Image 1: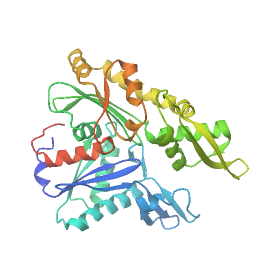
Image 2 (image 1 turned 180 degrees about the horizontal axis):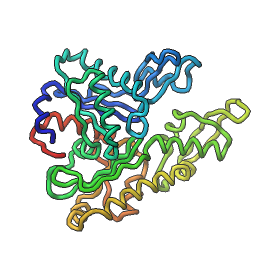
Image 3 (image 1 turned 180 degrees about the vertical axis):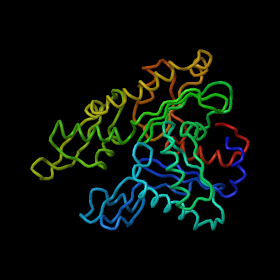
Image 4 (image 1 turned 90 degrees about the horizontal axis):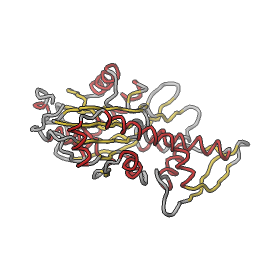
Length: 335
């Protein structure tokens, strides 16, 4: 893959430009940066005030003159100007440490990205300081990152549940046999929790509270011992209020989102040639991405498909580690 480009990778970084978080892999060093994909801007000038972790602290807490925004939506650029500020910040931060004179950048992108969206990503990277920029499909990056034998003729199957998208793909001989990208991920789960709490209790909660609920008590299947936590928010009258909710309620809130993920997995299996279906039944389905850490999601998918399911090593970093392996291993020739 990109055989002619591999020669440029003497000084290179790989970027997982995620909806929720951006991770950067530096050739020869590994993962050197992991920060939220958030930019705080001044509303009048549109100039960035803070990027990454500092900007995330401002979410929901900024005065009227400042906005803390996520320039990525569903895994692709939603705000070109702000995303360029963010990319420049990450690229320059790494470049300052390395003193690179010539920098190549590999950016993982969703499989379902349009040519216009892909061009926007590459243009933003080059304007942000990359001398050479190429893209790598997220399903391939994720599979490489958790060590699946992507180059073999036997099939591998990956389900990467990220912040903005879920990528489902069947891979064989270094290429994608079938893939589907659905715009359902961690952010959608958070939004469903927010909507449920508002509908059931007339309580407004912020995105950080919704994410905390998902992490602390969220589950995809019934738990042996259900969990509860205190939720804090604002009532309709504007006054602060807290209440207790349980994991069974969270399952109800995110149930439709999980069904969409299961349907995408079933569709991929339906499109798999018989020979490859046998490989998948033997090898199982690999899960990656932050969403793979939702309690019981492996069991949910396995029960729905009849195929063994396992969570890959270091699933949160699968995509960026895959860009790293692509950069480091010049012998791999996938597409």
